[in-house]
Every structure is written in C-alpha cells, then in structure tokens.
Length: 350
Image 1 (cartoon, rainbow, N blue to C red):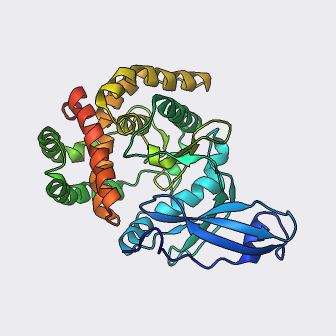
Image 2 (cartoon, rainbow, N blue to C red):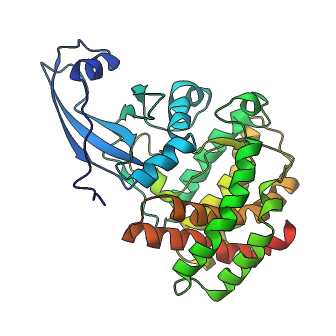
Image 3 (cartoon, rainbow, N blue to C red):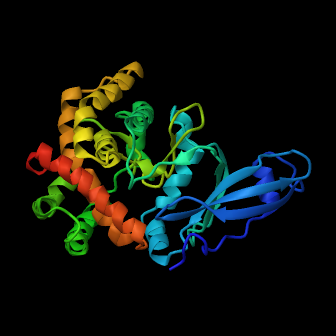
C-alpha cells in the first residue's frame, strides 16, 4: 500500500492553476507538490508555487482521489467526491462556517478523477484524533457546527438537492452493509475494545435498521464526519478551520454534535464534565442566528446520536485503506462514543 511519502502526485496544468487564481496563465513557473494530512478517502498535497513576479499565493492545497483502490472506490460509489465539490461551489457561501478559500476544481464524471484547489491555511495545524482535543478546541468546533447548521435548519431545499438529500435506497443499503461490517469490526477490535462496548454493539446491530430509518423532528445540513482530524487550529481569525466536506447530507444536526463531542475528549470524565456547557453554547448560537429549535427534542436526539461515532467507526474501518494509525483512530472513534452511549443508555431510546 502507498505511504504518505510515495503517493502518486497527479499532473496539474500550470496554466489552468494560474487562471483559477485570477492570474495570467503564463505567470506560474513551477509547482512543487508534497503530501499533507491524514485523509482516509482522498489524498491531499501542498503545492509550493513559483511565479513570475509576486503574482499569486506562495502555496495552495490540492485534493484528489485516494491512491488506494479501496478508498477511491468508496469515494466514487458513495458520491463523496461530488459532495465535497458541491460544498465549495454552491453551499459554503450560504453559511458563516470557517473553511478554506475555494479557488477552483475539475472532475471527470465518468472516472471520478478530480482536482480541488484550496487555500493553504498554514500555519494552522491539524487536530489529532488519537491524542484528543482541548476544551478550547472543542468549543471552537461547536461554534462552527452551529454556524453550519443554522442557515439550513429545516430547509426543504437540502431535502430536494440530489447531493444532500437522504437517499432511501442508500439507507437500505447501509442497513445491509452495517450487518455485514459489524461482525468483521467486532473480530478485528475484540482485544482492543471494552467487552461492554462490544456487547452494546451486538444489541445495537439488531436495532440498526430502526436507528437508520429514524426521522427526527428537526433536520439540517450536517457535515457527517465532524471530528478533530478534520479541523485546523491556530490560524484564520483564531477560529477552527473545517475541512473534508465529503459526507454532507440532510440529517439530524445532533449527529454532528454528539459525534464531535464524544470523539474529541480522550478522557470520558472530562467530556462528561463539560458536555452540558458545550450543548448550551451550541443552542445559544442557534438562537443568535434566529433558529427556533426545540431544545428538549434535540437533547433527546443527542442521546440517541451518541451512537453516530460507533456507526462511523464500523463502516469506515471496513471501507477504506487499512493502516496502523487508522486502526487506532477507528478504535478510539468507537470507544469514546461507546462509553458515552453506555452512560446515556442510547440503544434503549431507539
């Protein structure tokens, strides 16, 4: 399997690259690319740019399909690449979310090959899923979630949008997929995860169809994989920068909130101590954005959606390239929400 240092770097037309940054096509002399980030479904590269004069930015980020065939197939078959391009081309402008500036993109609809050119947000640095987040980092993430959810709260436009609507056929497919993936996940992590979490997982697997078909009172456009590894800190107005928009979909906003809070804290007791205050910060920003949300209903959904991290861990671990870091990341992605779901008795609420 290719490592971060041996991933193939796609050829990029320098004239096109210059033009999408509103520069003369001949002004860009060279682009030196190097791998960056820890993405599981797509590969990312930093391009150091050499210009005639001081025309454009000194560096940019390019995303493209994963060099791993399994991850690439997942990205194409589930429309993940198309979703991310849709975010940057049409949806991001409707929100106050802090994400990289979009320069331009291209995609081959037949093969799924794409190039997405974004602002390089250095010196901001990526969060670390394995190490966990600080309280301040989680607070910054919660603020961005509220900025994402507010403008799309109960907005029928995202229900009719082909790229953001929940597809009933895909939901049925996920039920079968989860039933297939859970035993494999359980076997892989049997010696790594608490037996209580695995026992709860067995119970949850039997109720997964009910979980997947839930239609909560409130919906919004959710990120779908809002976690510390997909955030940058230390730059851009001292706010978190949100990355990886490949899993956007119309769904319960509490999926994002519970998933983010549960997966971020390395120590469950620390998460539990700050959980209520973080929820209140989220609801406060919704109110400031003139969203009339039923907090009681959302709090109940929060308890159920503690299971969202378990679902993401089970499915993703079986559908992307397997790596040593990925194994531990997916273990933690199941473990931290697993303890939260046990505390909240989440499965019984389905």
